[in-house]
Image (cartoon, rainbow, N blue to C red):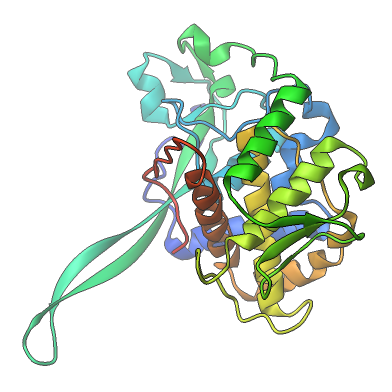
Length: 315
């Protein structure tokens, strides 16, 4: 018996990838599970919070973060690193017989020169999406020892929270405190938060603030993101809330903070299900927008260096 899916880069069609990924997340949502919250279930809180990592230590981005977070928890992997069958061979290591790989995606575009109506050369970008297979390092024998090392103890809570304060301050967003609701007001361009002491714990406060700061990036002077939302619960509103949920999860991972599920967002589950059931590309689009928002906020940090990795964005 050989490792499963060791060479599947060309096996998945574009439609297959959209369908497989979306169906999995729909299945989770139907059970009330948010895939992007899975890594912080109680049995995993002792581990270091991070994004999934490539074999070279570079964090995955966008849709692949959700895919591999979900795989890690579903299959019980604690190690954050993943690699392809061929990459394992380059280390003189091997994937154990009978192991099944996990789907990740790569999206980009190629430029094709065509002849226009007036005979001129016109360049047209043609998007493409492909799926390929990776294995968690816990499925691989013979790798260098550091791949199997236990995660270092996370930073003390106080230090992690201090870093979140510095992160929020560096954005220069207007954040006001008061009342009993958290929201972003586009017209006034401000984030409204309940008082700090109104939250059940520090993580809840910062996870909520990062959610609202993701909304803040949608302003026309920043990322100019609009889904044409007109009322609570419509398609555009649900899409923007999904972007904010994912953006907060990405940023919480970057800052080492456990994201918290907000009780007032339970009503969105049905709306998200409807969006995903109607559009197989919606979760890819939301993840890409969330990644852009996280990159934008990271770019506002002092001496911040955000390197775009050559991997999946929404097609």
